[in-house]
Each structure stands twice: as C-alpha cells, then as structure tokens.
Amino acid sequence: MESDLDKKIDKFLEIVAEIVVGGAGKQKVSGFELWPFHPIQGRLFFTKSWFTDLLSSLKQIDEKGFADQKIAFAFKAPSKIAQLLWMLDGIKQTNLSIDERLYIVERLFDLLGIWRKEIFCKDGKNLILSSKEIEELVKKTRFIDLQNKSRLKQNICILESALWMYAEMIYFSNHPFAHSFQGPYELDDKILIVRKYFDLKPPFWSFSEKLKFNEVEILEIYEKGTEIKFDFFERGLRTQEPYRDKLVGVSLKADSQVLSSANETEKILANLNEVIEEGSKYIQGLDLQDLIAKYTSYWFYALKPFYDLLGKPWRLPKEVEDNIYRHFDKINAIWQKLEEERLSVGALSMKERAENFKKVFDPRIG
Amino acid sequence: MMGRKKILLKGKGASAGKAEGKVKIILDPSQFDKMRKGNILVTVLPNPLFTPVVLKASAIVTDVGGSLSHAAIVARELGIPAVVDTGKATEILKDGMQIKIDGEKGVIYGE
Image (tube, rainbow over all chains, first blue to last red; front, side):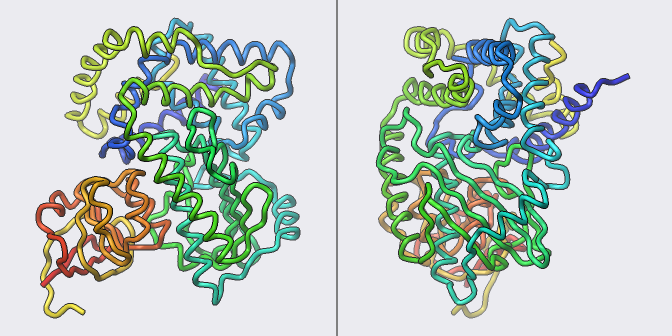
C-alpha cells in the first residue's frame, strides 16, 4: 500500500510536471536576459553542497528537538519552504541515499503543513489563517476604501508589480524567496488576499541597502466572486481574468509603517524604482561567474533560518566558491552536455515531457 | 482614434482589456528613453530590467512568452492588456504606429 509520504510525493510530482510542461517549460525563464544562464546551469556549481548543508541542518535541528512550529515559523512564509523543493531535480547529483532524500522531503512537507491548511494549495487556495484569525485580522485592520481613490488604487497596483519585478531581479526564477501570496479568504460579501514581500535587502546585493524597507504587507479586499488563484510555489497570481477593477479595499504596511495616502505610496515607489534602476545596472555589469556566485548565495541564504535556529553564522561554503571561481570551466562544460539533453526533451510530446519531469524530480528513484 | 482597422497580428491574450496607443519597440535598456507614458510596449520578452518602461506602458505586446510569463503576470497586476507569443511583433510593428490591442482575444489591429 502506498504510504502517506508516497502520496504526497506523487501529488508534488503532478504539480511540478504541470508547471514545467504547462507553463514555464514553454517559454524562456523570466529574467533570462538579466540572468544569462539557465537555473540548472547555475546549480551545477553548488547542488551537492547545498543538499549536504540542508540534510545536516535538518538533522541537527531535529536532534536538538526544536518543535516543528518553531522551525516552520523561522521561515517567514510557506513560499520559502515550498521553493526549496524546486531543487529536487538536482538531488540525484548528490551522494545522498534514498532514505536521506526521503527524510529531507518528508521534513519539508511537515514544515509546509505547519503553515498551510492543505499543503498543495488545492483549488488554487493557499490558506494559512483560520476563520477566527481572519475575523480578528479584519477587525483590527483599518482598510482604506478605494472607491473614489483611483490614484491610490493605481499606486497599489504599480507597487505590487514593481515589488514582484524587484523580487525577480534579486532572486531570479526563485522570486518566491521574497514573497508569499495567501488566500483567498472568504469574508461575508468580499474576499481577502494577503500579500507579503520580505528579504528585500539580502546581504549579497549592496544596492538593496538603499531600499528604505525590508518588508511590505498588503491586505487586499476584492469583490465577492473575483477569481484569484495561487499555486504550490506561490509564484504569482494564477488568474487569467482581469481582477484589478474588483479591488475595493486595501491596507498597506512597509515594515511597521502604515501607508494610507497616495503621496506616501508614491514616496516608497520612487525609492523602489531608484533601487531597481541601480540594481539592474549593477547586475548587467556582472560577469557570468559573479552572477552564478550571486545565484548560489541566495540559494544558501534560503537555508539561513536553520543557521539562525542553530545559532551559527550564515556563510557560503568555501568549496562552492572554489567551484565557481577555480573550477568554472570544468563544471560549466557539464552544462553543454546537459543542455543537449534538455533540448532533446523539448521534442517529446507533452505527456512524455510530463513523465520525464516527474522522473527527474522524483527523490525515490535513480 | 483609429479609423478602419485591420488585423495586423495575432498572439495569445494574456491580460484582458483593450488599449489604443503608439507603438514603442524596446529591445534593450539603451532604448528606454524613447518610451513615453501611454505608449504600447512592444518587445521580445521583458525581464525585470524593463520595469521602468513596463510601468509607463498602456499595454504590452511580446514576441514570445505564455500566459504565465513575466509580461503576462505583470500586465494583469497592473490591470493593462497584454498580447504575448505573437512571433514577430517587433518585426512587423514600427515605432510610432497607432495600434489597438485586444488582450482577451490576443489580436492587434492597425490601419
């Protein structure tokens, strides 16, 4: 009989196959021109060390007996845990045993389950809060009615787009490391969406220092019936229908400061635009090795919550730096071969491609 | 406003809505200066570098991409129409052309 973990892995593989074959696989990865390499190419330099680090951290955390809730909440949002599972397509490059792989996957599912009511975001719902918590949140929040406030409404839309693009600029295809989209929560005659942006000033991007805030929280009220959906990785709103006209109320916070006027939102937008402009110029000026080093940094930075719990300083392993700066050509040559294989997958039928991706991501085989 | 219109291009409707405006073809950041507020951004596939021009656009048209591409997601967030995967918008459309786009049907009209 299939175990509970097997069922979860099967479900996860279905989701990944759908995403890769149904969406992202059909196009170049977003941000590809800014980050001129394929994510798999970048991961060749650190996958093995990363999984070793993840396994060792999880084991130490478990040995110390931390409660799952404390571990899960050390990550600021479920998206940051879900995103770690994107690395599973590289797990076969490691020397981890099948048992060790399954331990990692099971623990990540456990931690996701602390956050989410249903870990796979069934029916496009990413529900974190209980009905009672929602009730309390709505009671204590001062929402701004956006009727007759078109300038503020426009600013909110621009701010959210700019934050999403900024997250993509600093975390490339792994932008859910910087945001979480939650809901939709049913209110009496409306729906509530919670958007959180965080880790906007990671230590490996010097230009981000100029950003005047590290976190933004936006609570949005939409008309009842507005179709808004999320997926397992919380990569963005999965909604095709126009939904912005149906945004009727909002509450916005940058760090702890509540912003309630068009002028205030314009100020933070101006600051964000300035940082985006400076950041994009800076990133364009980096060579491939430096870009891969940055890419590597944020994958290890994603493990920082474990380091914090263990009271260890976060750092990039020395062997990974060596891979990037001392053995670059040797490791990069592997990519040429992988790229050929990857392109050959493109010739398969959609069904065959889906099955292929399931095998690649499946920690139980190979 | 446009007079008699004909279909210039078809792609995938990625963000519903209609918009009319002047085409600005932006292929790389060196061309950002020519974009004015209200122009229709026509590009191959915008990436985060394009943030300043995306925020000025009244609509987005791209050569490649799907409904989950960067351009599509950002357009829906901004509440502006987008047509993606046209194949050759950056070749067929020219700077300054007056066009109308239907982001639901994925059609670009011109005179």
